[in-house]
Image (cartoon, rainbow, N blue to C red; front, side, top):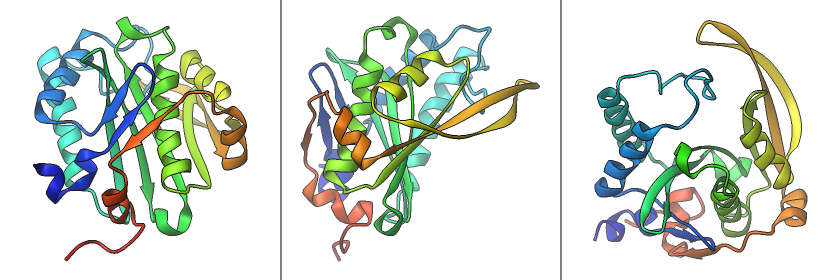
Amino acid sequence: MIADHFPPMGLRLNTPRLQLRMPSDADLAQLADAAVSGIHDPEQMPFVVPWTDQTPGRLAQGVIQHNWSAMAAWTPENWTFNGVAVHEGTVIGIQDMTAKDFAVARQVDTGSWLAQRFQGRGLGTEMRAAVLHLAFEGLGADAAITAAFDASTASRGVSRKLGYRPNGSRLISVRGRQVHETRYLLTREEWERHRTVPVEIEGLEPCLPYFGLGELPD
């Protein structure tokens, strides 16, 4: 099995309605379909890089290649856990968590997207809660950060619900227009106060060196 040689592929995060795992090729095919089905209203762009502004074929290919690239580039010093969210056997979106020099910095950054037809059910909250549990409970993180545009009300709502606080902002260009982006910070103390989603982690122990927490096997 591939997890015998790269343990993060065997990591599982389970919530009441979801499982998050790094994607197999079959998962990526479903993830591409989820992206093509629609993520946001065409009039709005919730991403700094407007990667959804593509034809369906190029969009699907880009989703697959982006995730292959993230997994191929993994090192203990600079990693991305790109967890596909599986609901009732179907891949409905992705929740990633990235870190650089985590062994020292103890901080993670998160980002996600969810197929539009599954939005509004609280699944986005479960996705984020799952990786935050991995970060704080599983890996011993001290802080998590994220960002959202003012128009991204759902993302901002998830951040508030899970205990994040505003932590600065910037003005950027998206689709040739000025957009205000707010950064959010979640401390370990606030995470502990706001943790309401039960999460179970499977297969973490052999993964720890790949997150920078121990020596890699010879």
